[in-house]
Amino acid sequence: MESRFPESKRTFTRMRDGAFSGGDLFFIGRRSTKTNLELIRGLTTRRKNFLSQARLLGFVFIFRFLLGLMDITEGAKRVNEALGINGRVINYPRAEIGMDVDKLSQYLLVKSELEKV
Image (cartoon, rainbow, N blue to C red; front, top):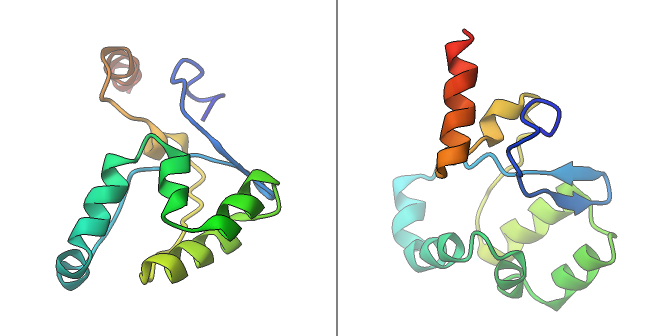
């Protein structure tokens, strides 16, 4: 991400097996959405505050994460267990999936990239 879009200032989460950035790409089934609506709202409200999200996941999660003992697979497993969901991590190799366009600077960066095509 940083080499492809050096001006993006994307946030990365450091895990034992690397640094990861979210792609904000989700598929949530209708039944799961209805069942977990309050949880989904809570997580999206806290989307820019990892520690606030982590509190939902418990002390062991926070402890292992902060000490760098958790890899991405364990993190996904613990999130699934804590939230009662069946989510998966997709380690996508292209930076474009992680590029937001919710700020003017990001929009201008993406626009300039698209104009090159």
